[in-house]
Image 1 (cartoon, rainbow, N blue to C red):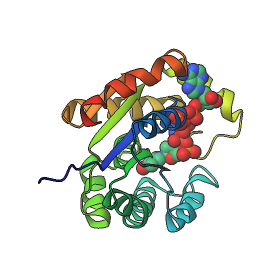
Image 2: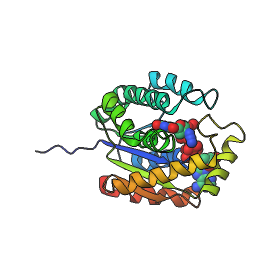
Image 3: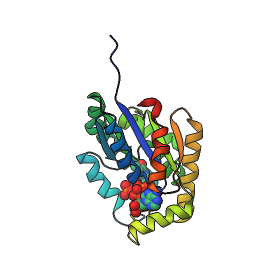
Image 4: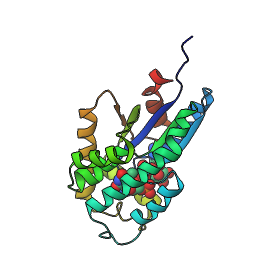
Length: 211
Ligand code: Z5A
């Protein structure tokens, strides 16, 4: 008899303040209610080594690292996260929901940071063997609403990447849109406007065929 493969690796992506963390928690509860084990994780971070690298990446002066150094650190954190957390969970049949993954490096360091997506993909090949999600949900929110949400949460204490100017965040949004249109089989773009209660069913609908 063929065994059902239950494990799924799902990533949530989008600009700052789009509501990824909020939606990840809500989705996890709904998927658990369907009888699956769900592991909630995030990047940068998600394993002991990657959480240590997270502090290096997000604290300190805005110009602490250039795009190349940033991309190397994100790739190193991701390599640890994939081996220590994501693959073991998938191996036992769990769903893994991850707040940001490779596409954030492609959009932030590759696109907005000017490094180029091919170099970032090459680092991912070295660190994580090119490992990709089964599905990526890209939360799309207009820049004003996103900035309001981020400001409501962080006030003036944004991290060193979140604190970059509006043109950087606009370049991130445009890089995400390019990534989604380049890989329509993996990406689903979700309207993230409206209340959290209104957004969650849109995300769940984009996963129904995998559940
Ligand atoms: N980064 C990178 O450059 N390269 C990489 O490879 C990776 C990351 C992996 C990580 O920051 C930073 O690292 C990030 C990208 C960069 N910097 N930026 N920009 P983080 O892990 O500290 O946080 P984040 O991933 O940037 O989170 P976020 O994007 O800022 O937020 P979010 O998760 O999308 O949103 P949220 O926390 O769920 O919601 C934000 C606020 O809005 C909060 O007060 C909520 O209660 C509220 N909210 C949420 N949903 C709604 C709705 N529907 N209506 C109203 N209010 C809402």
